[in-house]
Amino acid sequence: MAGRLIYLIGPSGSGKDSLLDAARPRLAERGCRIVRRVITRSAEAVGEAAQGVSAEQFVAMQAEGAFALSWQANGLSYGIPTDIDAWLAAGEDVLVNGSRAHLAQARERYPALLVVLLSVDQAALRQRLLARGRESVADIDARLARNARFTAQLLAGMGAGLLVLDNSGPLEHTVECLLRYLDPSAR
Ligand SMILES: Nc1ncnc2c1ncn2[C@@H]1O[C@H](COP(=O)(O)OP(=O)(O)O)[C@@H](O)[C@H]1O
Ligand SMILES: O=P(O)(O)OC[C@H]1O[C@H](OP(=O)(O)OP(=O)(O)O)[C@H](O)[C@@H]1O
Image (cartoon, rainbow, N blue to C red; front, side, top):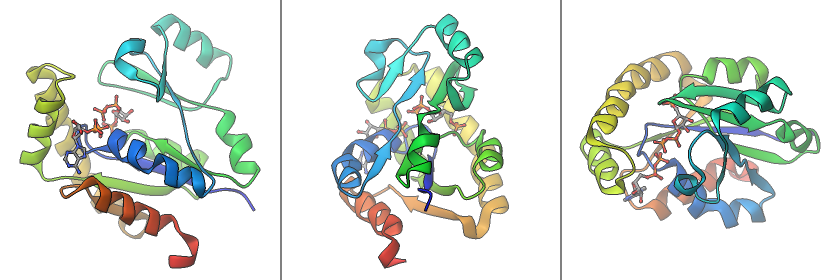
């Protein structure tokens, strides 16, 4: 049986990277891979979880067909390597840090996509982004403004196919909820 593709989305600062890091060992135990994305962000700013490439390298990789999914947002390009197709075909579950704006295209290619929307209340979100200190205040406000366009749309359009995962509380609680959702015997 083919593996499941889990597409994690949520506003900037909602905790997608933190959740993936915290859940990584327990997902690995369950045979669920977390995709290493290719991002046009300087390698130092990415950490180990992504492969940083130049804009030129990204375009070349795309032209070679290296990506199963790719999108642009916040002035960056993101690619999901085609490796995921082999993993899914081999029955492995695969979790992707996805884009809300790219959801329709992702669904088109992977109709059985499981969508997990990470949410957090707006004031806490701004505080977390400021505390993270990765972007300027202007960039943070631009990301927050971008959120407003998505959440209502997503909730209206998706209904049952969507798990809304609240990350306003402790991260460990969010990890537990995600694992419970992904555990086939618990559903
Ligand atoms: N449940 C949580 N409680 C408190 N702070 C959190 C929680 N989840 C994430 N954070 C913090 O919020 C900030 C943004 O998280 P991050 O994982 O980078 O979000 P994203 O990848 O969605 O942009 C980070 O500083 C992170 O430590
Ligand atoms: O269409 P959107 O849902 O807004 O998503 C746009 C991009 O922003 C996030 O990436 P990134 O990890 O660079 O940003 P973040 O850590 O601020 O979420 C997300 O993973 C997408 O790649």
